Image (cartoon, rainbow, N blue to C red; front, side):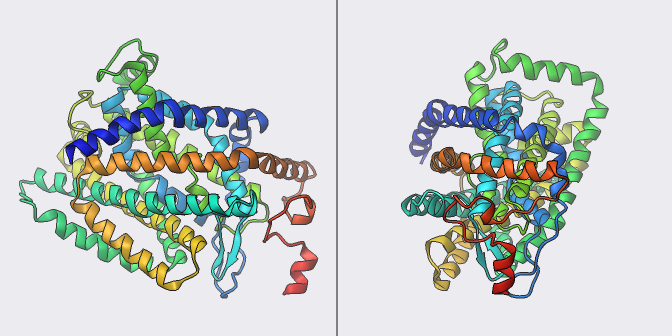
Length: 482
């Protein structure tokens, strides 16, 4: 098992440093230039777009609102990537990893805009509203079903199974750490018991459909993110004198002026970008699956909203973890990393009680990530087949993975996640590169309507040259069908 893990680590390091990071960076810079930095200049519009109301779905219930779609993707984003992933990046890449996480977060916002706008344009209707994502824009936009099938399989494995195992493993790791701090000895029994409890709770929600997932995310995400950032703010205030030194560390280590963890600038870049991408998911092709579910009047609206999610994740939540960890004066390259490193840092700053509060936060963020990850897989299983038996089988498969993740090896699970995430990103980036011209046309249409003082509304007759668009009927057609 150790030999397998070492081989995967070696593969990941080469894969990310020489392929994934350069491709993501170049394409994101290209999208930034072509869109005139949409991810920065339209931040106020992102906030405004989040308030749209959802329509009534075919089954009589409300379709998913813009904010609920944002919450589903945030539920998947705000999880172990923010708490365990950022801590791991700092442990292995030093404080400089935080700088590269911030930098890439700003740049890849353009990729997030493109992929989520495309997901809205090429979405399809289902009984509870809409569904879509990269597999759908590969099919309808590129006319490449084979590519959509490949992506659907990879994302189902990556999010539905591997990332779900990561979240379950992090929950158990945090609870065990908290329990052992009280003097309780797990002796191997606690992991399987916690695994069974997680399976039961997950089953209760995923068998209730996307609306129950959206409602759970809408309730928990703002609460958990707000509580976590409040703790981080308290720690910053208590250590305000040390803050300038920490910020200086972040910048000096980012450019290799001080080498840590034996890796210098290379380790800082790789760890910062890799863990940042695991956290904010921009360009990865996951968030568009949630963005496509939203009922909005123009595809660009949800593209903007999902881009705002990158900033909430990277600049707010990830930064919170970074300051919590760095203000505790950690040992870089130490074996203590991941969620337990963040817990220990919080305990160092606020006392023993905070370790248990951190356990609760980790439980909430990781569990909502399980729900978000599950939905990404469900949407793509729906792309592959309409068989209800397959959908049910996928549900049970996720529950099995939740249990296995709870009792498995954290290092192997994390490294497998890095591998499958990289493959998934490459397939998605290969699709959005040629389709970005479509997203830019939609952006021009949106801005033209805003200049006229209108609340932008898109119908497919506004850009009749586009093919493969199944929704967005002209109003007269929609009325006739009704």
